[in-house]
Amino acid sequence: MVKVKLIYSHGVVEKPVLATIVLKTGVPINILEAKVNAQKGELIVSIPVAGDKLEEILNLFREAGVQVQEFAETLRIDWNKCTACGACISPCPTRALKFKEDWTLEFDEEKCVACGICVTACPVKAITMP
Amino acid sequence: MPKEIEKLRSIDEINEKIKRGDAVVLTAEEMIKLVESSGIEVAAKEVDVVTTGTFGAMCSSGVFLNFGHSDPPIKMTRCWLNDVPVYKGLAAVDGYLGATSLSETRGFEYGGGHVIEDLVSGKEVVLRAESYGTDCYPRRHIETVITIDDLNQAILVNPRNCYQRYDAATNSSDRVLYTYMGTLLPNYGNITFSGAGQLNPLCKDPNYETIGLGTRIFLGGGIGYIIGEGTQHSPKSGYGTLMVKGDLKKMNSRYLRGASFHRYGTTLYVGVGIPIPILNTRIAKTAALRDEDIFVNIRDYAAPTRPDLRPIIKKVSYAELRSGKVFLGDKEVPSSSLSSYKMAREIAETLKKWILEGTFFLTKPIEPLPRQREFKPLKIRGRELKVGDIMSRNVVTAKPNDDIRAVASKLIEKGIDHLPVVDDEEKLIGIVTSWDIAKALARDKRKLEEIMTRRVITAFENESIDVVARRMARHNISGVPVVDKLNHVIGILTTDDISRKVVGGGRIIW
Image 1 (tube, chains in turn brown, purple):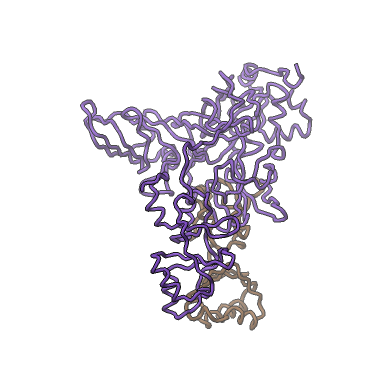
Image 2: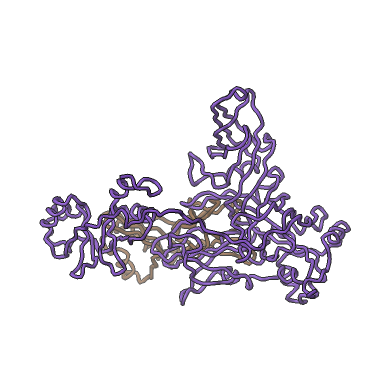
């Protein structure tokens, strides 16, 4: 499973690129977040395959004129600053942030879609997006 | 005497035991466990002190500072620390820096709370001050760098800390709200709450049997004292507060953290811990109250009303809130805290350690805190302007199948920019502006219904002008139709009406 950001420029945005690739490869690509208008679009998707199959899919996007950005890192949490208050937890749309047993904060990178709502929700600015 | 309040031990006896090193001290969490396993009688008999803790945003916090005199000296009339205004209505070099005071250069990002944290951390802070100059204080300007060590006094004096409980927040509207209760997602998307519940000091002695004027406490990692009831103290309804003070120079920035709430402002996270001496069984019982036993209301922050008038959505326990999800109707809504339970725990543990080590002794309050107080709202005398007072009642409306050219000449003839569109029963169904008309003519459209905006932002006659002005600014519009309960258009309010007829505070100036 890998998470990537797909950037559609003007001209590409009107074409059913993702649907075509899903039909062609049979891989159920999951849209985690979408910001699309008439001029451009940005999708964050998770692709549940690896290796050659993944490369094939990413190449299909590139060939269709979509810019592909892999997520190296979604959020950066400064654990020295974090007070484990919890202000970031309930606003998170994908439940990527939660408390551990000992009430310290836990971050599940897999679930994060880098929407950034936690960045503004954090009262002590412990969360940044690289 | 009821058995419950029969004296088990005195504060002097407890202090003797602390001195001897054989006092039994438990944190509130440990006390709960002991009561669950051995019963209240045993716990009351065995335990001398229960320690509590809380670590949350406490806006009514600040520090009295004395800068010392420069040569030549200055009677500072205006003063800033790192560009954050310091209150200077005091003697020449005394000031009060409040946690919510905002930086004049960095806005919401940095404020009084952050300066306090920086001072406690030993960081250098830029001091700037101005004056008009007097015979005894000739200097008119000063700019220098200070640290907390340069200050003669830095005394944390917080008019309201340590709320006993605090109502939780949610949002029924269709947009994200940024509040002092954090980020509230639309359509009841989440719930935020504050307070340490079963670790919260005032929840553990709600009858004020041990907590009072002069009680020695853990404050910001140092020693502090309760100096009275806090502002908005409302003990009768279970929302008591404390006023506290302590020497900032002996505090620790781990327990005093500057914070910013997005699009709201700055504040200070304060760590407070209070020892509860178990003087009788009733105190043992309250000290063992669990999250399950402590209830608050969830209020809807979408309503732009006074806090106590925000609609109550549900009554819940801290246990429910802390579980991470609360059912609102049949919808499971994620809930999370704004105050740190982990830090509250750490504070209760630290205070316990201090007592066990014999470095912290309990005090007998000089006076109890008031148990009967109500928190009154501010009544506004006289009548403030409402939408109905300044709106135009002479509204020109149109019908959906009106011809655009006819509508255009109507707008010009009447000199207006907003045209509500109504159905045959005069009910609002859309709006067009002169800009929409210009666009429509350029694109050769014919009927109004092709171009009108159907989702109309409206106002009611009895709404406050400030509330409606904020609504217009948010939607970037310059006018709203005013409707009655049945959605009939009864007037129109434009930014023009507001700027021409109202000056701050809603006084008529024509």
